[in-house]
Length: 136
Image (cartoon, rainbow, N blue to C red; front, side, top):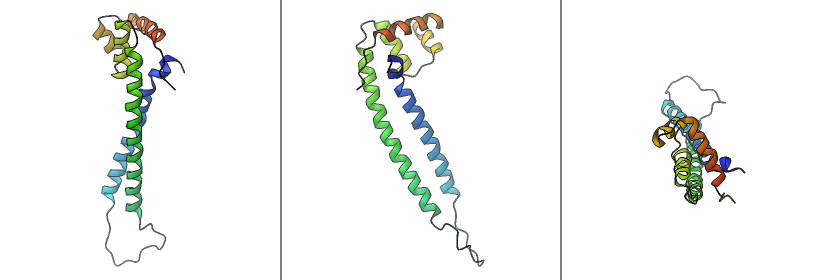
């Protein structure tokens, strides 16, 4: 695993969490729409009378998955932060923290650091060479 891949792990996990949060919102919306209709008309014997139960089970499972990924994200961010703090060049460390911990765009990083975006890329390449991986 390269330093860039190692440092980018947190971003990918956050993307997965956000995707699952959107799925949970969709399931919540579905659960709110599910209502029972009272009628004298006979119902199909094949209809799923447990649909609300299934939605709730899916919600609980999805929330458990998100909680596990959040725990993983916290652990990985702690490892990444330790790797960044071990970088002896403070300018490089600041850039890495802005990019990989705070998830800032290159334009935002350049503005904070007072450089052009192209110069920020140069510092980034230099910073990646200074990272010592804590991955297992």
